[in-house]
Image 1: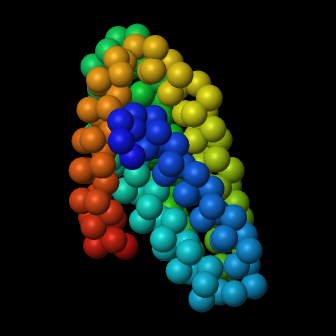
Image 2: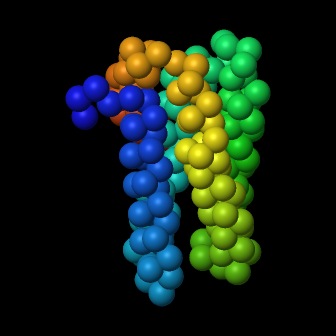
Amino acid sequence: MANATIFDRLKQDHDAHRQLLDKIADAKGQPDRLEKLFEQFKVEVTAHAAAEEETLYATMLARPDLREDAQHSVAEHKEIADYLEKLGELAFNGEAWKRTFAEMEQRYIHHIDEEEEEMFPDAARDLTAEEEERLAAIFARRKPAELKRAEADG
């Protein structure tokens, strides 16, 4: 992705997460496939959130006009992480798990839609093209390390 911005990279991840959620919906009657897809989703979202916080959010938190958006998104990341933790404590694919997963999915879709429609445009107005490209490069370096960490924490 030559000259990709941080927003391009994050949107690319969001699209991959949406596809995983679609595959999860299609796997409802296949518990083994469902479990693998859910684990993949959990690792991907956890790594994405950590790398996003270390790049875009860290930059936004340092800017008074963007701080509130970043704080809001960090809080939503925590909410999603809490859901993922709770899902790990429930009987996989049981009724409580399905209910909790549906809530988490709704909150996650809300979160990424809000980022793409509101936060990214606000941040783009404040960041230079060079900053957007630099953050994308940092994100590209951080995400593989965060994927390894998320897989290890499984």
